[in-house]
Length: 199
Ligand SMILES: Cc1cc2nc3c(=O)[nH]c(=O)nc-3n(C[C@H](O)[C@H](O)[C@H](O)COP(=O)(O)O)c2cc1C
Image (cartoon, rainbow, N blue to C red; front, top):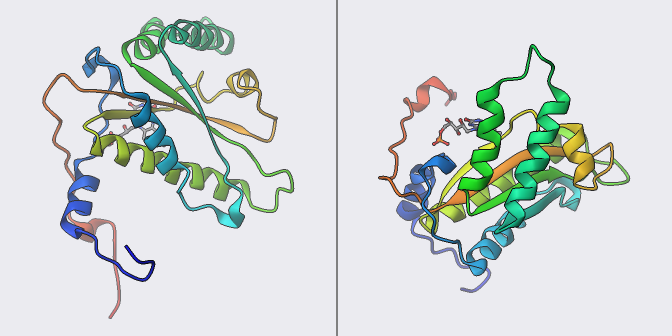
């Protein structure tokens, strides 16, 4: 397609956007996700918009046996950052189960540009755009996705564990896997609830 030609199937774009659903690891089957598909997901994430071309997204991909170590790390962190009062056994178990039940877990981070010329909120929003690209790409491949932002995965300790700096942020985990159940149906209200305009 020439650079000045625009021929997209707009119905297809809308269908993809509306088909995207949060599907959690407990609904995935054991099928591995081909490396080429994971690479495509990351490449498309890298095409997200970025204020000032800082490319603030960082992705740490974990699959196979490495999942055990990731599950242990996150559980250890959860123990460290909770007290007897705040610790929830169900949450603790869920943190491990999600990683082990998902063929691929991608840790999401925001790496702040050294000059800090761009405000932090813009960098975080850019990473959100990148995750949306990932989720849409996963959907196009028939993969379910789930962005989880529990306290351990967004903690400073996990940020340190990933080898990032104090000005960076751990922004959670993105799980992907093939759903074994029927694809869930989403629901949204009318746009008049969220948009207004003047003619
Ligand atoms: C930034 C962000 C963080 C999220 N974190 C969580 C989370 O920690 N736990 C969870 O159950 N869902 C989380 N979600 C997923 C939402 O629950 C989900 O998007 C919502 O239920 C709408 O469903 P849909 O994605 O299928 O449209 C998160 C979504 C976003 C955008």
